[in-house]
Image (cartoon, rainbow, N blue to C red; front, side, top):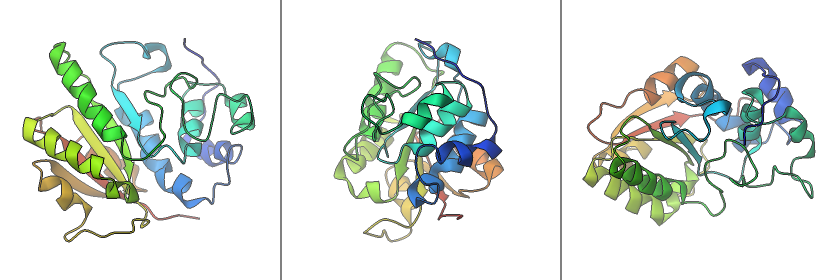
Length: 229
């Protein structure tokens, strides 16, 4: 099913988000520019192609802060913006975690952290087995989410098997409990990934990072984005 609505621009996003959640909520604010750049400039995807085998896939692994995600989906015509006014209420299709059976454009249902990247690895293997080499899978993780061990198993496997159709973007808003010597990017390069670090507010830099894969293995982008409010 495809549900379309009036489309909005970047300058409308914060107004759309406030219909869902307080925009000053830092996790929502920190993912906003990455999400917009993905849907506005990078993803080979549209509301009319949600079932196309050749579409790119976006997996919101950090599903506990979906306000920015819902706002971008509404802005790009994946769902009616009127749905935003009833988000997180009984009977609403827009819950506190996205449900792929209810939210047009949501590829996975997000719940416990640490599942988006393992699911992307499975999808990448499935696409490879079908001979579908064009689609890419983009996964958004939070910096604190990297404390989950499932991510490291998936990182190791993807790097060792050269899954070059995966791009991970880690939004680093300084919320992680545990640090990592050398920074987050080193977690990925140690496992055979390419990686880049970008300003999480600079759309040109984000786009360049997301397009920075070289076809020889999976790619990671670390986007630094503390709250701009």
